[in-house]
Figure 1 (cartoon, rainbow, N blue to C red):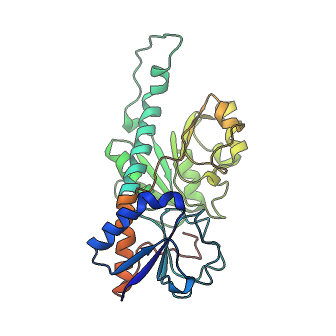
Figure 2: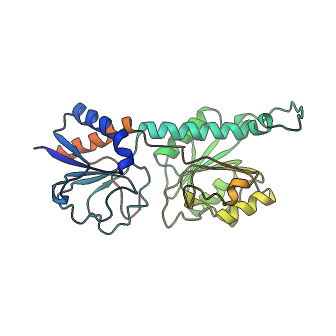
Length: 310
């Protein structure tokens, strides 16, 4: 029986996703009809992204799963009309992009590249940076992205501590959990990477009290979620030197408003939410595989736990 797959991820995404989704459906052997509109009671699956075409999921009574193109689901998970299974995007290409962004900026700050590349005083200071083994890195969040980034940095020689709400074990990382573990993880960090999901529990997790736990002059990288850090507390910590620099890829409001203090602060680097962008070719294969699994009666991949919010 032909399955109707409704692409409800926004008109702007359709041209880039359509050929890849069709190719992925063919490769998976799916008998699927890909459409941008149909009667609500005829949609078997919904490909979704925030800002797309659906706000009320109640009329989609035949829908077997809502398949998000985003790794984060905080903008949809609380929708009371969404009773269908919801799957977030976990894509090897998305993970690779995040690993490359995190590793690149960790090395940038570790090696002092800004000081050497932008050097208007033309100072000649041959003092080398410490080796990676002498630069402790802490990663908050040990999901798919956090684990991959932590292991990549450990492979480069950095001592990496990972923290999560519940206990985890990740090869090559010192893993901590709970409130005491968070204090210990922050206390050891010269570079802090935040990769937690956006939930009520993680909102402003990095506040003034927790910034004070970092080693003085520590660097913060936030490619996770804009809500993880208290902006005002971060700016104050940058001004006092408690935090040496912040490289931020995500923000509470995006695009970042032109009058936001982050733009002008000399110790802040802004990147435009590029650390882990979903790529149509690989994401389409994940979508196709989940539809295949659903039709075969197999468990869906990356199904969201509504109680946890991710």
